[in-house]
Amino acid sequence: MAQAKKAMSLDGSASDQSSIQALANKAPCPNDQGSKRTSRAGGIVIEYLLQTAPEFRELTDLRQKGWSNPAGDQFFQKQRQTADNADGQTVLHFYDMMKKIGRELHLSTDAFRISGDIWRGRILDMCMAPGGFLAEALSVNSGSRALGFTLPLCKGGHKILLPRNLNFRVKYQDITMFAADMGVTDIPKEHPDAPNFLPRQLDPREVFDLVICDGQVLRTHDRAAYREAREARRLTLTQLALGVEHVRHGGTIVALLHKIEAWDTVSLLYTFSKFSSVQVFKPQKFHAKRSSFYMVATNIQSQHDEAILAIRKWKTLWRLATFGTDEQYGNAVDESETGVETVLEKFGLELVRLARDIWNTQARALAKAPFIKAQ
Image (tube, rainbow, N blue to C red; front, side):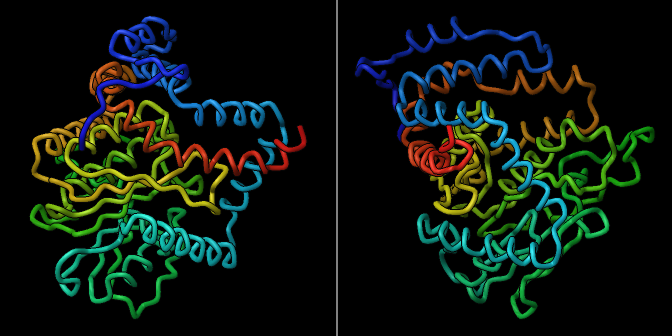
């Protein structure tokens, strides 16, 4: 993917490396020693986008209105309560919703299309239940086979609603405990989860044409207390590392991400742009008020040096997030990130181009929200 060298500021002037460096000098550096560099990088990205993207400025204003109104918190809290206490009807609604999102995603990006012989096509769903996304992927590729991992019901996972006539098999596993797949075979005996880590689940030679990475941390998940602060990152790292490692050369990864303007997300998109073609997509109806969106990475060069480097980095971060001290983990997060100035210089314009529709969709939805319209 071609990289842009300059961005334009709101008044039309060029924003080159010197102006990006000025933002770096301006950005505050918080006192949190565990994520100092990452937090500072996030501030630089936000300042850059406020100067270069009027769509982001509009969304930022709307978000501020929502944050200042307690009704906004109540709205999202009610959604969380519904998700946490889902009955059979709610789970069915969620399944149907994910099918519709998957259909809209595919119509917009052709994300689920497997090239070549679909009768030999293979799909990996890293966090499957209830199965709406996988149902759509299999309907597009009739004859393909799928493997899905999902959290067991006894651990707080969702029920699978995928019709049994589809060609798939399920492994009820917590993927964040795939120690051997993530490169760790020597588990400290004193670790709180020592007996729960799992041996290898995927054969090193096993590859898939399409990998779906849309898992999220479930508040209903029964897990050890030490995992809470790092669980979201552990889940993301597992999905991405194993997804890229096991995607076929030229294959596709669909990943659920949040806040396209967040430094971690920007860095991730930039990383994928080095060894794949990147698209982004946000549904027009479902979750439109939220910051979530989907990355669709196609034509992945899984043996590219940058892909191999990314897998190694993600596995290292997972190991430290799982076994390391707060200091070790925080330092690794900081040191693993590419310098924000370099990313914005090479990827800034492309980021704005990718993000524009995401921001506009969320802004339109928030503008209609009752907790904002009432102000």
